[in-house]
Amino acid sequence: MDDESLPSPDVGKGHKPLDARERSRALNAAMDEAYELIDLNNREGRFALILMSGLNAAVLVGGTRSDLMSILAPGARSLAAALFGVYAVVALYFMLEAVVALRPGRFRPQLGGWPRDRADYPKGVRYFEDVIARSAESYWQAWHEVTMEQLNAELAVQVHSLCIKNNVRRVALRRLYEGLRVMTLLLAALVALFAVSAWK
Image 1 (cartoon, rainbow, N blue to C red):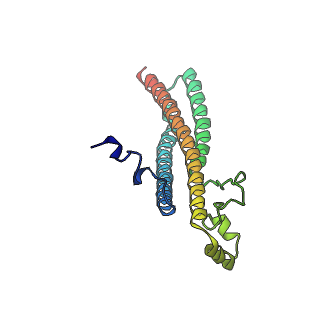
Image 2: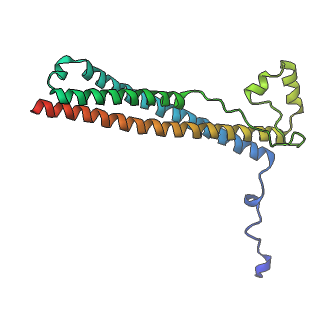
Image 3: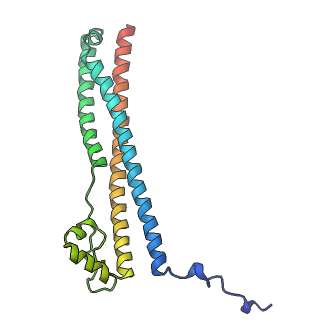
């Protein structure tokens, strides 16, 4: 058989651009994944808060027991007080980081560089702030006028915004878990200080 009669490997359904309905399905799948990542970030943030609460409870109990403080020598008491102070500052700072990691966040799509006269400019029928800016009748009318390309463009913009939101949360969660590591080390230093004093 002549090689020229064989179909090119680049020809076929797998190598052509997606049609509008295929793009819509792919974008909806990407949006589902983005929402799943938001849910995962929320669970990780809540787990970090549980760990932080346990560390804080241990430090609070240890710091308020006078019988524990009495076993420390005067110099060790100053060191323990300094460690407690540093721990309190670190705990407060990373509690604020937890708020950043878990707060809802507002990432409105930025369409400034997208010409409004383009045929695929998003119509504003999905994003909630665009929806509530219209009357019910105007919103219904927009659905009569929207094209598949405009709807897909709006889906793409929403996925992009969700990915930005996820990135901000991941960075905040990374800082939060770094803070947990610092808090754990400070608590370990306090426990070691009390253990050495009790041993003596």
